Length: 111
Length: 112
Image 1 (cartoon, rainbow over the protein chains, first blue to last red):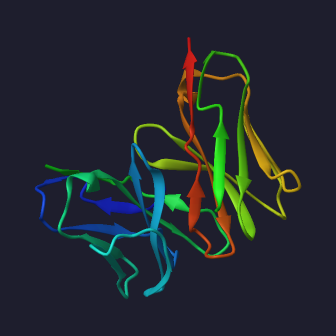
Image 2 (cartoon, rainbow over the protein chains, first blue to last red; image 1 turned 120 degrees about the vertical axis):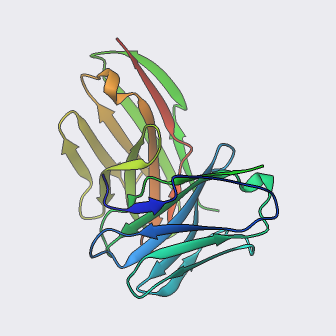
Image 3 (spheres, each protein chain N blue to C red; image 1 turned 45 degrees about the horizontal axis):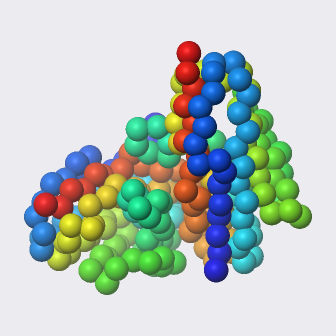
């Protein structure tokens, strides 16, 4: 158990819908990261928040957005969902200069 | 363009064998290299190697980083069936700590 928690574990939805994935980082970690893992793209960095502020962005689609709240938990919002958005979404956290620990992931299936 | 390449893509070994996994990288402003083990779901952290720590060991697993030749090796000795997994190599740069670029992974299958 990495100490990073994510909800829900599984999500099934339809194209065009919007979903929210939730993440709580390890105790004391100020950085939260979101990653997407699909069969054809592997593990891809989406976005990082540090203490409530956006710190770095990867190839995150404009339909996707994230935020980090004062209690450090984070949400990833995915809208106008397409079939190709089906993937595993991981949240990870770290302190600066330390290893990055991954949560259990949310498996999203868009039908 | 930054890239992280792992080899082999997959391998099958017998229990007790030694496995050597490779990870080469070409990135700007290298800062760290991390190894993860991924079984059914979440990547589990194994090692982090940086300029100040180029060799790590934990039980049957060990890893080295060659910053001159830009590669890392993960060794697993006396393999067990529980070592069957995908092993991922990831590189972090000065861009942002935790913004990792992952290789495609090496799938290891250990047969009894």
